[in-house]
Length: 410
Image 1 (cartoon, helix red, strand yellow):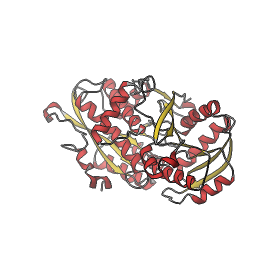
Image 2: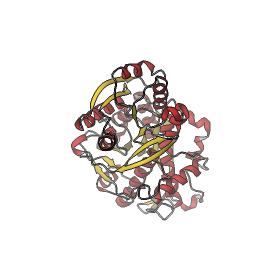
Image 3: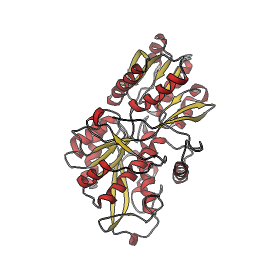
Image 4: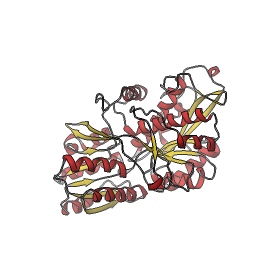
C-alpha cells in the first residue's frame, strides 16, 4: 500500500495528469515508452517534511526533462538507445525503519519494475533496502543516508547524493574556528540510530581535529517530543555549542524551543533541512542565532547563488505552491540530472553500464559548480557526490546565507 501522502493527492503525480506536475503536458505520441524512477521516503511522522522535499526534487528533475527545459536536455523526454522515454515516478513511505526500507524496495522492484531509485531520506531504510533488495538485483540506487554503511565496496550499485556530517560540520567548525573563536566546547544531542551514531562519530572527529572539546553526548529515540531531560543534562556540562547533527526538522524545532524555555544561552548548530518547519514550531525567538548547514537562502544574489538555483527555487515554489525551498531537494534534483545524463552518455538502460558511466561522469550542478566524486579512502568506494556546503544563520526569523564551501572527500 502506498504512503499516507496519497490521501493528499500525491497519487496524481505518478500517472496521467499531475497535481504536482510530474508528467509533461505533451501528448503521449511524443514518447516511445515510459521509464520509471523509483523513490521511497519518510512520508509520515516528524521527518515527513524532509522526505517530501526530497521527492519533490526528483519530481522537478523529471518535469524539466519531460518538458525539455533543463540546460542539459533541450528536447522533451529522455532519449536513450534510439527511443524517447517519458519519465515517471512512484514513492512509498518507508516510515524511517529497517523493515519499511525492505518493504518499499520490494514494491519498487518487484511490483513496479524500477531499475533506478533516487532520493531516499534516512540511513536505516537505505541500508536494508540496498543490502536485501537493490544490490542483489543490480538496482542503481542513490541515497541521502549519512551512515558510513550506506555506501561502500560491498554496495557497487549504491551512490550517495548528499554530503554527511563529516563535510557539513567540517565546514561549520572551520568557520567557527575563524569567525567565532569564543566557541570551544560542544555537546551532542543526536538520534539513537544509525544516522545519529554516524553523525556523532563524524562531528567528534571533525571538531576534535580542529581543537574543540566534546563535553556531553546524549542520544534520543526518533519520535521523541520531550527533550527537557536531555537538554538539562547537556546544560549541566556548560557547553559553548549544542550540536544536533542529523536531527529531523521537527525534532530540531522541539529541541530549540525547549532549550530556549530552559534558558540555555548557548550557540546551536543544526542541520536545518527545512527551516520553515523549525521556525513554525520553535518560533523566531527560540530560533534566533541558530546556525544551519543543510539549507540555503535562494534569495541571496551572486556569487553565492547562481541564476540556475534561483530558477530552480522559483519552479519549486510555483509547482508545489510552497514558499520555502529545502536545499536537499536541490541535491536530489542534481543527482537525478546526473543519472539521466549518464544514461544518455552510456546510451543504455542497463544498470551496470549506466553505473560504470556514472562513476566517471561529472556534470554542471544547479549551483554552477561541476560535480565531483569522492569517498574511496573514507568509504571504500568513490560513490560520494561532492556538492557545495552553505553556512547559514537564522536572523530575525529569516535564514541568512553567510558562506559557501566546496569540500573535499577523500
